[in-house]
Image (cartoon, rainbow, N blue to C red; front, side, top):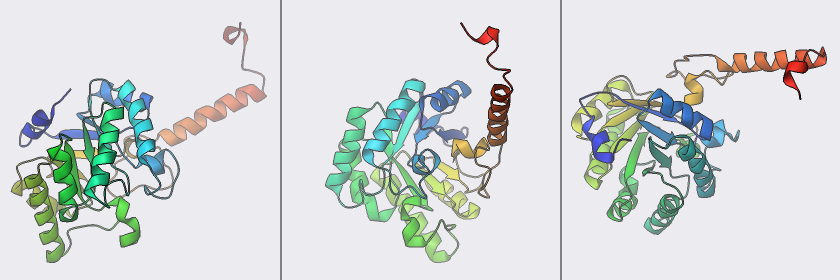
Length: 262
């Protein structure tokens, strides 16, 4: 299992590989495949629960899924998202909720969405020994504010704000920063300007690592594919077709045969 310092030291040496998991079996697969970091993302709200966005996810939801993931990946560095309104309102709520997550699980770090505006919360967590991964660019927890998931880093003003946030996050002590849907040239500029790793999602090839929602790269969703997703498989059609075969066999009385019962 990688440590915080080992992850930081991967910058300029090799790309960092991070993927999401919300359950025991996917975590088991990711560990066997050899990913560096597993993120238990609040994206579970959409992928696992079928919500329209991540906002309904609670701290208790996160803890439930973290426990499942850590049973499947005992030797992989696990990061957990802090869900919406578990840290934004105050330093105290950030400390209480992050502390609850670390006390009830074996997760190694938490991830908070936001830049300069949440530096006090991030500093407070790091000061009490809770490692933090930053997250700037598109922020899914702010979907209502932006009316969607816009690309970040288009204008000089946006670039300046992203750069200032990245530098302040580094100064506060985060060990890495996720850059989500940041224009590739802007993400490259940020990556070169800080000493800690950047992990991109839809932010181009010059980040220090890449992260995706695992279900996206597997092709688990047939109806929608973000621009930045390369589908490495199409498991949705394979699963549906396999289930159809089972249904057909049962209806035609071909299953179970004697081989499959006692």
